[in-house]
Length: 102
Image (cartoon, rainbow, N blue to C red; front, side, top):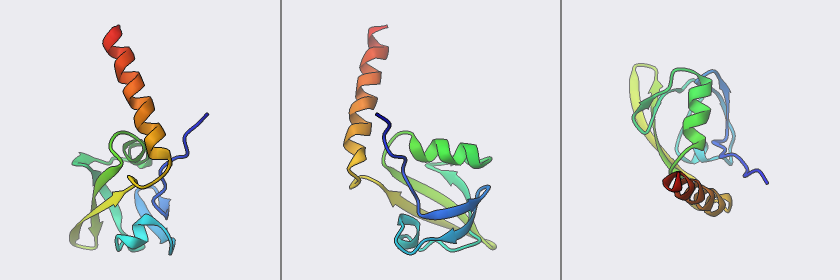
């Protein structure tokens, strides 16, 4: 059964934030329309595909680097408290164990 994707609570235009929903993680972190996501956990975001992959993979706590006008802003979104994260971690450990056996 698929695990629900991590949601930021934004509408995107490429890597630019078009809209921030009131009840999402991005709103709680102070994101604003017009912010541009340039990196996640130090990895450059080239396009929306990169962005979605980096959000969904790995650790549930992500550090975002945003461009807000001329300013660079650091922001953390954390999905650790989401119910799906336990299952995501279990499956990742299972995949790692299988890779070790190969």
